[in-house]
Image 1 (cartoon, rainbow, N blue to C red):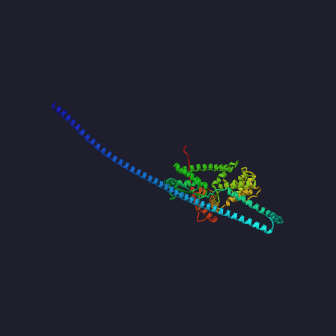
Image 2 (cartoon, one colour; image 1 turned 60 degrees about the vertical axis):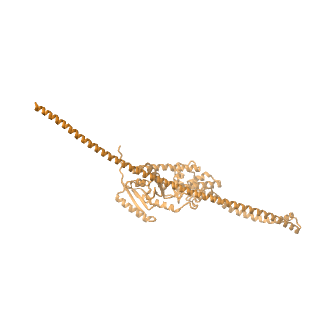
Image 3 (cartoon, rainbow, N blue to C red; image 1 turned 180 degrees about the vertical axis):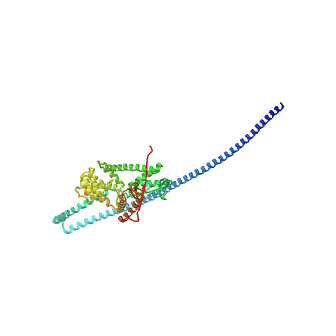
Length: 510
């Protein structure tokens, strides 16, 4: 019995000891966990404070840079305002000086007028005195002397009159040519248009140089896709906040510029998106060309023009002839024709219509082997223009015989508009012709889908169809084209021929 009691007491004591020991261990672990949590919390707190300080310093630096940029722009604006104010002050001083000079000249003129009047009065007195002396010497009155003098002059006058009549007839013949020249000069003076000299490059402005990297793309894929889609060379160099678009065709440059603007604004720049935007931009530009043609016809008061001819008139905006903008030239010729027709009593509206359409053969969708005057005449006939207008178009370079009075007017007005100093530059036309010959030479080969002359004609990029042209044939094509250029064409420097073969596989998951 005592043994059982002892065992029970021992078990109870052991249980109490175990419970106490367990509580001590748990408390020790709890304290350790609390210390670790506090230590980790301190580390996290220090890290967050450090990150907050770094972010604050970065924001502060960005703010300071923005403030410096604003101060720089403000200083630039202030400098421009001071320069304008200085120029205005100089102009005011110049006007004041000229006003003083004018007042002085006016005073001198009044003094001279008074002197002339005094001399005139003295001369009249002297003349009256001499007439009185002559009458006393000749014993004739003034009236008698006049009558005798008139009788003596009558016979001489009759003889002289016949001579004058003959001279007047000869002078009338000379005046006919002089009056014709006068009409031409007056027409030129009444029509004054500014000349727009075409350039082969355009500048695309960007907000920051970071955009250049996005336009180039990974390994240059974006810029290659854009050049292939538009046929324009895109030059990305060290020029700050600017990209150069180089191409002899203004339509291509405008499509590239508008497409770039839309891509940069949207922010999504990749090859598929580039092709989509370029196609959409090309369509928008075609609509703008049609609107330009309609607006030009409205400005000139020309009605009933066929829509296709109206579209060709709009295309003239993006074409130059010897450096002279073709649309400006055609508008000027139309106004000159209207003025001359009015002076000669001819149909003004018909003359203006012929003047506007005389160079329509320079902007067809396809370029056949015909002179532009003949091609323009055929297009006018095709779209229902009157025979007088068609003949004027075809005869303005003496390609066909003139059959109406409007034809020589159109020819003369075309020469007047193009012959004014500074209106044209033949070197531009020769340059464009050489560029088109380069592209035409490449397009004559089978398997070539498109060709673009870039870098002012120093490089020819030829895009071929992968199904028709192999890699080996691409090498051969590049060599063949370069040899033909070398033997058949005249060009400055050297021409680099680049043949591009690209394989695309497209499928759709539906």
